Length: 354
Image (cartoon, rainbow, N blue to C red; front, side, top):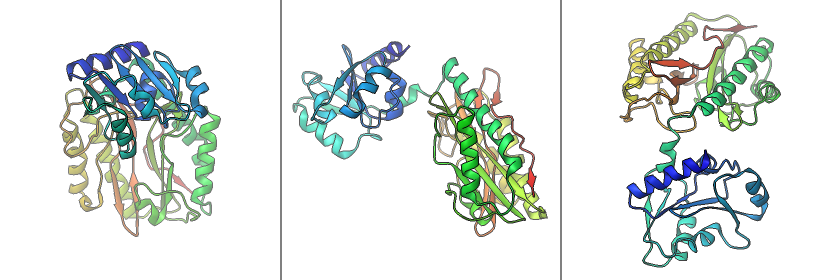
C-alpha cells in the first residue's frame, strides 16, 4: 500500500516535470511511510528511491514503523544535507512550502549544486489525503465512536461547580480508556462567557447554573482522528440560550443536507450563513462551517472545490457572543456516493445538567 502511494507521488512528480520531491509535512510523511514521528524527519521521493532521513533519537522507531522506503540515519548532519546527496545530479526538486521552514530551505539550497532548482510542489501529497481509502474511513469511524462513547459516559457526571480543567481531564481520560491513542488538537472545553471563544483552552473557571459548556475534542484511533463538538447547558435554560442553540442546531442540520457529491464547498458553507443571519446572529458567526478531517478540503468561503465521495469533512456552525457565551455543534461527515453520512451518534438535542 505504501509503495503504491509513493508510486502515485512519482507519477504526480512526472506530471509536474519534477525529478523528486522533499516531503516535510509530518502528516504527509506518515501517509507515505506509516512513520508517525515525522516531526524531525524528511522523506525524499525520487524516480529511483524513497529515502526517509531520521535523527538518532527516532531512527530505530523509523526502521520498525516505516514501509516502502529506505531509512537513513542523519548522524551529525542535518536531514537536508543528507537528502542533498541523493538529488545532486537532477534538475528540479519539489518541496512543501507550508511545512518547510526558512532555515530548512536555506540548508537544503546551500547543500545542492546551483543547477538544481527547488520548486514549490503545490501541496501535492496533502491533496492525495483528501479522498480516504476504506480502511482509513474505518479508523475514522472508530475514532468517532470513541468520542460518542466518551460523551455518553462522562457528560452525565458533569455538574456545576466543576472546573473546565476537571471536566477536560475526565473526558480525555475516558477517551484514552476507550482506546484513543492521542488527540488531533488540544481539547476545547469552555464554559459561560468563555464558550464564546471558538478555540479557547480549558481553564480553572468553574461552571455555574444558566451557562453553556462547549466540548470540542478529536480522539484519534490508530493515528486517524475524529472531530466533534457538543454544547450542553447547566441549570435553567433562558429563552435566549434556547434560541441561540436552536439556531445553531437548525444551521447544522440544513448544512448537512447540502453535503453531497459535487456540492461546492463554499456553497455548503453559505447554507449555514443564511440560517444564522436570518435568525439575527450573523455578526457572531466568524469561521468557515468546516474543514477536512486529516486532509483537504476546507468548507469555507473561497473554497471552490467540489465535495467527492470518500472525503471526510466537519460541519460545525457556531454563534459566539462576546461576554455572554456561545454554541457550536459539529460532526465529522463522510461524503458518500449518494449524499453524506454523519459519523457521530451522540445526541445533538440540548442536554441540560444540574
